[in-house]
Length: 480
Ligand SMILES: NC(=O)C1=CN([C@@H]2O[C@H](COP(=O)(O)OP(=O)(O)OC[C@H]3O[C@@H](n4cnc5c(N)ncnc54)[C@H](OP(=O)(O)O)[C@@H]3O)[C@@H](O)[C@H]2O)[C@@H](O)CC1
Ligand SMILES: [K+]
Image 1 (cartoon, rainbow, N blue to C red):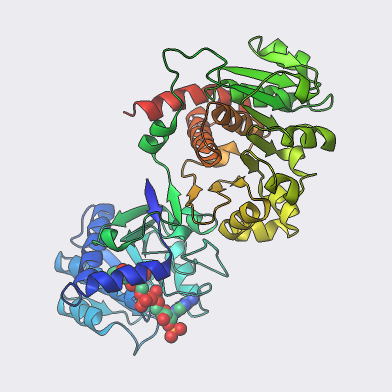
Image 2: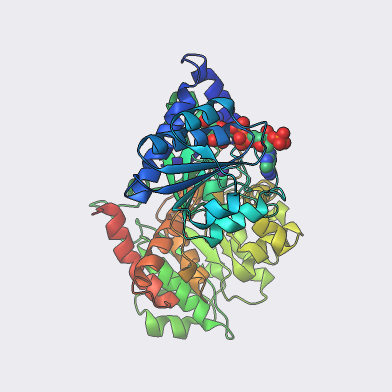
């Protein structure tokens, strides 16, 4: 599991740890880890041209100490202070002592740099880059240099992943002590490049559980349902899929495709696309409805391609089993009805649907994904999976960590992809996973399957993604 903590929490942990250590130890640890990553990226340090963009705080200090270490190994290191007079004094002395210098012409050194370290702001930064930093960030981006952000890409918000203005686009980010939420959540995530964590010993001082976490293979493997020796198909769970319409039969077929790969013992389809479903998946049980008469299920999925059918959504929500509501099912949703349910509810909106539920613009949801998913979960008293390239899963209890899916891929932004995901997550619900686990595991497998299906670098269809889920499941179980 990868954990992320907010800036304020990191500061508290840092203060506790620093009280036990000689002054400057943490910054030296951070700088050593940072310099090691830079050396790795450069391949050959001797003779490399390194430029440090140095802000007024400790983020700049980290860059200066790391620059000093690289200078000692023979790199030509130039510092560009953005707030001369407020530059970290110890760091600047270390750099000049090691043979580094302050650049006379920042744009000239940036034009020929091999590596640029972004030490403008870290967890103390607010808002986007200030006007004086913007041309420097652009010059760095316009050069051939590898750009390494110190702790965070400057201009991104550590706690929320928001980008309020211009920010520096890095190829890699070296972060200290713990991940910051912004490194894992879009839009800031896309500015961070590859993220490397340097352990500076903060672990014992950070709260557990964290506010945000990202599953990894072994976490998903632990959560996957496992049929026991006595399982028959009904004990393994039946998932009911209420989806599709005469107009959109394809959504039903795709949701069933996802559900068949999610570990439930059987898939019961209810609706107007039964012929299309059975033609493609003869193993599915089909019923023309209504859902209450279709037979027992351990979880329902309602919504993909359903069209306008508020009555069927209401009927499914009245059931006593977990319900996943997606797509058209989200439109008629009333918070009180969902809050009053006796079983778990998992809502799976994309940004546009989340915006409609919250009564805000889609742009607002996309800019503030973490706040939006939390707000929805609180308002509906439900687990909410907000789709996107960094899918988030929030629980109704705000003290439970929000899960961020690290496996997203832009290849999944394709028609029908969400239908497969909802079937898959519903199947995991029927197999007995809790709503947050079902959502996070489904997003993970779906992302991995999307990456696998697009492995040849060609566009993928949603069926191909569904087909790749089995392989993803196997790989998570036995990596390598
Ligand atoms: N905590 C830890 O465990 C460890 C922390 N370490 C490191 O310390 C970093 C945090 O350092 P920090 O607190 O000095 O803040 P930092 O991010 O350098 O910003 C400082 C100043 O920048 C300014 N400023 C604000 N917004 C701005 C903007 N948009 N554009 C330009 N400037 C802006 C503002 O000053 P102002 O100009 O407003 O007076 C603000 O006070 C952390 O990220 C990590 O790298 C490691 O060394 C070891 C362990
Ligand atoms: K930075």
